[in-house]
Length: 148
Image (tube, rainbow, N blue to C red; front, side):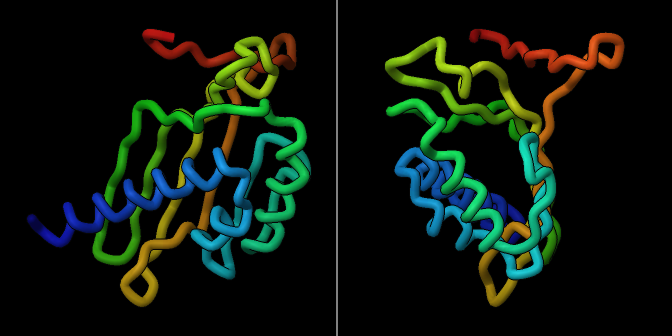
């Protein structure tokens, strides 16, 4: 296995750990995966955050609005890995388990993350989440995923 595939596997494991932490509502574990200088663009206010503390606070404020039980899902994952920088984009959503009509599961998000290898470990230094919108109506257009 090459160093690049080892790094890709490590990044995919990191993404799985993030999803597990989200499902547990563990904002501390989620934010530990981000660099101190991380910049994050979100789909909800405050729209832009700097650093893991702001990211953690944003998720902690969001948790009460999530369904009681859900799965953090990803589709269409694309990962490009260099020696010390990597970029990933995918579709991501919260899939409610017991409340299929819960608004938190209404759409897939488009996510792009940029990672940097620091002291042998991969951490996120940039993240951008977005929803497509129709400029004629100024409304969000839900993303359809095959098989959903």
